Image 1 (cartoon, helix red, strand yellow):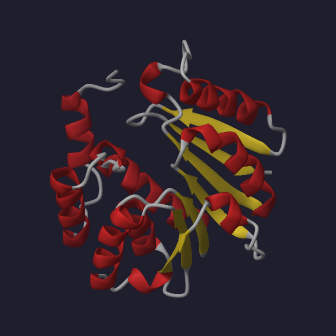
Image 2: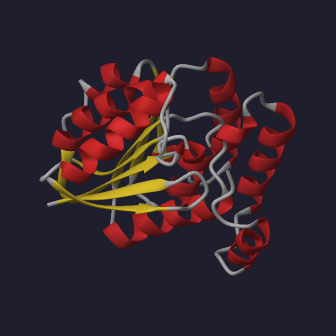
Length: 210
């Protein structure tokens, strides 16, 4: 399901921040050589993540779902020099691509990859987080939300990707459909946050912790 026409999307990209050459190369390699390339965060979404880092003044960020490292590098480019981004994944193959590009970036030192189940990694995090980006296995979305929110500082931000799920949240059938729809219903009723859902690509949910 296309929520916005390709022509409008292209116009928006043309009037948004230009990507770094390294990000352009990483996106190209992912699309041409990595299975499941549709999981790649798009240009507009990446730009929004980068801007959210700047607007919130985030210094400690958690990402759940690394894939080939595009979104992690996008956010790292916006973090201050002493900023830190922890990114969680369980796939050694796709994250090997990520590591290769991070090593070429002057911002790569800000990124720490945890190759383990995210809920396991979350148990080890003690310092308050400024921002969380959730973009991993959909069946665990609600579990990630419940585990992350207590670790987010007041005024911090949770961003969840794929919350429209190609429109399947309107009439959920599969387990992943129901999981995302359940997270969406839970989040909007969670009194600890203020939410807005945006129809960017496959849908993004932004939640500000009160």
